[in-house]
Image 1 (cartoon, one colour):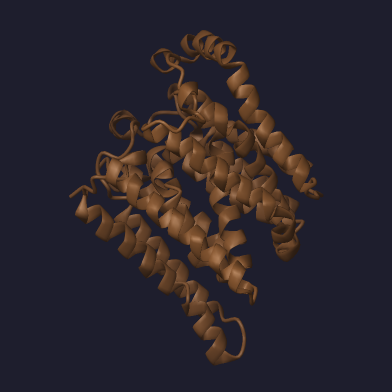
Image 2 (cartoon, rainbow, N blue to C red):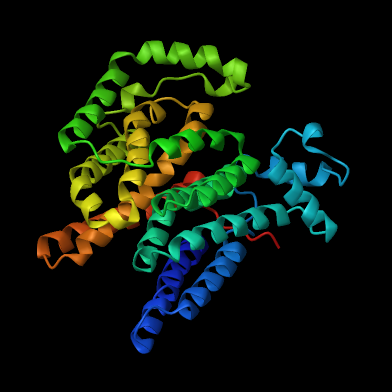
Length: 375
């Protein structure tokens, strides 16, 4: 456990310092320098690939992916395997060099990180905070477990940036890349087009929708249990369509699951309360698009945290990931204002999520611990 704390917090601090290089280059050269961003990007990709990509036995699908790699041959085609073409071709590329099975985990981690730094390079001021929240919301560990969907998530992140820059070709290319690794990502083509021009709804409407979602989840608990139990066998997830956790959703209790649901509700309320101001501050970065996707996650979180239904959680994965991005935008905005109140609020968020990461590692959430290196 101690090793996990040292490794993860050491990596967060190292990457945060690395992304000060572009700022330092800008200060010394009198303007933004590609050299600093290039060095920071390279170091980030190498460090994350080695430290995260070579973890052993991470996630419920780890050994399944190892089997995919082991039993896939150079003669396989997309029609002869159960997974997407992009993942197949990546396996076959690695097999050309006779890499061991662990290479598929490291390679997908590398692809994820390349896509992330492609997004970060245009937001150097946000980089350290994005990295912090990707770790502290446990997103980094989730994408290391669901590696195909992890690649799709970061490709979608770049696609959203392409929309903001009105680059339709890049948007289409990134959605296609996401689709090559996880078929579910295709839904973001129409979603992305709908987000071409957006403006946030009033805060009161957002809060009303959030509170209604929690209320309806409690009210229709039995019906949702029945629906999930009915759908589970059809989706080959029978073991997950079982128990209700709705009694822990808003109760105090002593169960960490209830605490988690309460924690995320508070975080979502904070993001909503500051949404208009954050959107105005980061209008040039298209913050509203990330916030709209986060809202989907916020409204469906009470359902997600009440029942252990994996297909639903997987469908919500892309939207949940946007919470980390929105938190980084919000914290950066708070820190940029010359106000003790805003700075204190930002500090409180950072402390909250540092504690969340500590607890997550201690409990092995999202397979964050124990830390085991593959070799």
